[in-house]
Image: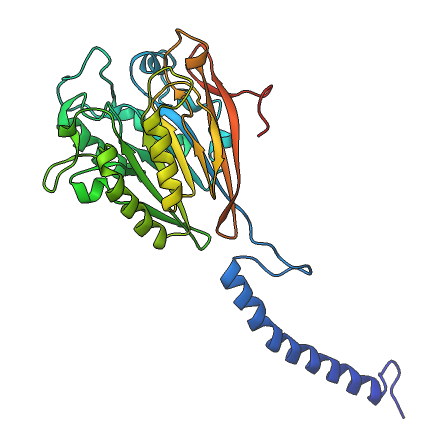
Length: 342
């Protein structure tokens, strides 16, 4: 006779079997879930999962001296130049720009009245904004002698910011930086044709990746070899004529050569004003992004610039989106909401 409230034997048996089946299924499924989680960083969902796109942001010329330094001092904040845009910049997987002023308290001024050298503390603003890679291949690299340039190398390395287009020798200056983001290898190279040949890095002396048209064959080979080791290749070029709104012949010839050799994107700096961009064969060319952080308040054109937002999916550039910016009277770049779609 069953006791009051005692379950029949068949219910107990069914409950026991259900528990066993549940435990067995858990043991079989859990390793597969963990395997997926380890590979993707996410648990699988019910629908087919698409890999998240990679976003890169490119900005124009960055100068942290003169009027920019004055504004920083007035507000006692080394982050000052980037406060209006940092939130958007930091959303990028990679942030790239051209550093137009060395960052150092060393060296002696040897350039013109336009020599540029930012205080060491200025690097705080670059790290706050989230810069990952900076080009140093430009015509202000030697404004305060090679001592300041070498000091800039050290300070950027300590801050965890990669640099291209300049180094302690030719091999370093002309070599790429390759960053891997979500299994996609993204390479960066930088060159300039500005300044004297003597600034070119040599086998045993620091310098920049200085080139002219006679170097095109060598640069083409460098681009081909770099693309073989990467999925996406970005080439930065510091060239052109200041304040001209159209690219010169060197810019056009170099940029098209670079795309034909395998570059996916060419980003230009130096003219201090925005120049046209174009889709060329399988790549994109932005001849000049203009100023990003600069104090050239003498014209409307020099107080405007562009950001380029690049979207990568399946190891290919899907979009290259120009975004207009304007530099306010306190030399802070802001997104131009009227003319841009972020």
